[in-house]
Image (tube, rainbow, N blue to C red):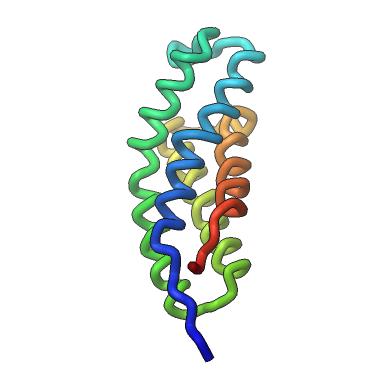
Length: 131
């Protein structure tokens, strides 16, 4: 039986597409059509896009580290790419909401955080776990 090798670019590509492309674009569109509620929200989509990419990359690093570690463990133990993607997406979404909770203090605005879980699901569907 031929064993497939893991696509080591998978976690990096999912992370970058989620945090630096799809998530910020969806969030910028959402923020453009809603009322600004904080100093970090502007009606200028370019400013919002830049802020969400910079802060997203910075604050997502701990979850990305856990995501990468779990990717290595799962690809060594399991061969089902669907199982691996579901587990990694769950870890990612839980990690996101823990990060959002820590950053917000007491409550999470699910409406403004929804683009990131959606972008994680989309990103993980685009790339292959195995070569």
